[in-house]
Length: 231
Figure 1 (tube, rainbow, N blue to C red):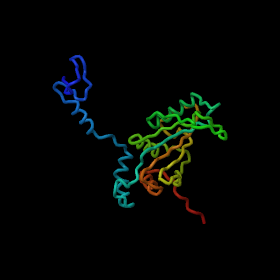
Figure 2 (cartoon, rainbow, N blue to C red):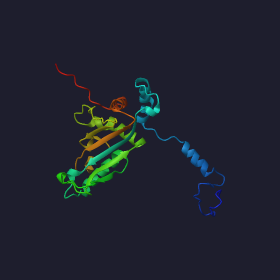
Figure 3 (cartoon, rainbow, N blue to C red):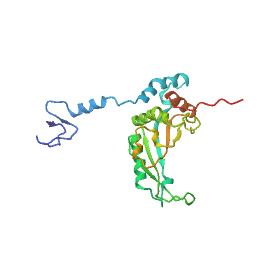
Figure 4 (cartoon, rainbow, N blue to C red):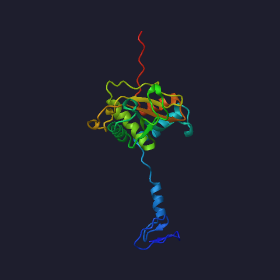
């Protein structure tokens, strides 16, 4: 092969890593890069539902025809607090492994450890002590996680009657908690030495509580139905 850069010297026994290397009798690396870039990124099922069903309804029912004015889900954050598991301001290795494995399995990413930034004597918190484990998902992993959360995990909650529709903040982000990790079918409880819950935050952009509730409802989020007042 040959290289068009003019400064990359290779012989027949070496493989040039220069972007302008052109193999003999084949396509150039620039052509291969261009062909790879044109391949469509994977689209999650829930994301496709949002684009095909929710976006048109935002334009027709909410008057948001401009895509830049429509609410979007930008990330999903899952964190597990470990303050109650500390012994002498230290976290046991098996507890850390169980939480890390759980978050890795359900999110596809390795979580990070959050440490206390300052000491608070009233809460028995010392600076530098482990505070929580957190993982942030975006794009494909976020949509896949939300799909499994709504359609696989939540129906497995005991005596589940829906989640509260009042847990939106001023910017439209939604927060709620789970009491145990066993609701996710991919978590092997035989390898878990204890049960822990988690806090989930669905972050919206360009939204408010009303729009976020509309989007999540159209996606199939199981909000609790308001109980009729008894006379």
